[in-house]
Image (tube, rainbow over all chains, first blue to last red; front, side, top):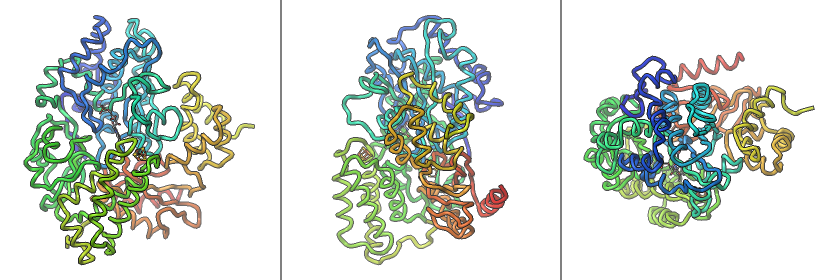
Length: 429
Length: 161
Ligand SMILES: Cc1cc2nc3c(=O)[nH]c(=O)nc-3n(C[C@H](O)[C@H](O)[C@H](O)COP(=O)(O)O)c2cc1C
Ligand code: SF4
Ligand code: FES
């Protein structure tokens, strides 16, 4: 697997033992934190810098980070928390794993700066349970930071105290949803909470809490070191910075590519070595499995940023780019994705619990030659009835792939129903 | 006498220390994981012990153990193999890997071999799709970039353990 280094996230990758604290420091790491503490930089100034950077949340929704931070009631006298969402389980996404593997201290420094800015006394980093060696590596990195005086009481001799802990998941995609994640840290089933109240007022243990994705927080040290303007200029207006794109599927070189926001998709595909075995590009899921699929020709005109992909009718999401070549049967692809959402629905809301099962069963029967002519309208209806009617966004996440597939590849589904077999002949998948 | 070894209890205590003093139940996921590593699976007695240790209602512990799918709430073979078959892995040949395992072990997903050596399960995305196809051995060891030779070598290695 390939990793393309960049200035913000994979900035230690060219050095030996890139994950070590000493390596990170040699690349300018922890200097932003030192400066903030030495000069007592006010929280407002930090939030303003993050707003200037146009950093948008890397967890899927693309919410402006500076704005999110400004919602936190910093003057609230009790405990407050910063939580990092490293529960990366959106099919296609594997960037946070490599961030924690190769540059854990960028995340730790980002969380400490966030803790300082938001007035948090502690932070929790919730790590996907399946990547156990990464959890162990993060445990070591936190110990290293604590031993060097970056965590604990009176950090670097200042009057700021903050500590950081890793918490692991154990096999539940829904815990990536921020309020399910909080429930999970509290030692409960990971069932999303009804919002409002939002975590900024009622979060972990009922205290004000800010939740950000791993890559979001790992971008903070660069912004505070080099300035928000410089980060913004790495990308494009309203889409600051570089971003790590996880490219999977039918490319020669799957991997994580840290590239400027706004890079043309065609360039990213070229970096990833193009389509495997000289085949033709068929379709791309541009932002993790929940993002509607886009035909290759539409993707070839897109740039990799939130606004361009949204305009084309999909989402940049987590930046997970799933590439499919001409051998892929879209009915089969959707069958597997529908099964995933059915399997992972937490079951609290009827439209999601019943709807995900229904969609899976219908796509399954179409794939297995038992589709009925009315099935496509049925799928449209079920998907339309889930979206917007549930406690959390998993409902929409389950409906969007169905809607995207029916929009662009309806003829493949019709062929399956009519001829009881696949339109795609070569059938690698 | 305690249900868990002194080593396991020391590990659990380290986890409890991560949370505010009045939030011991936050360590339940770690405690169940540690208990499972020691015992192989989570019997009612083990879960009751964890509940008692953390000051939780037993039912609250059962809820957690049944919600997260890496906990073994029934006995499993000595080696639990969990193959990711989600779309990105499927595009890279996860189905062929799963078929090879099923054929060699003579079991389907969700089954355990008669000699209780192997359990095969189907997994969801593990956040490692760039290394596909892949599987987990007993939750904590990931085997990546699988092919037929690697599968054969892995099964040989595990059989002799
Ligand atoms: C079903 C579901 C799964 C999610 N999974 C993740 C995830 O694995 N990682 C993540 O950072 N955000 C995930 N999110 C989004 C989070 O709820 C939240 O928006 C995000 O962590 C906020 O961080 P950001 O503002 O830095 O992007 C998920 C949301 C939903 C509805
Ligand atoms: S939408 Fe689905 S996953 Fe989300 S809370 Fe409702 S049932 Fe649970
Ligand atoms: S789809 Fe298999 S690890 Fe992501």
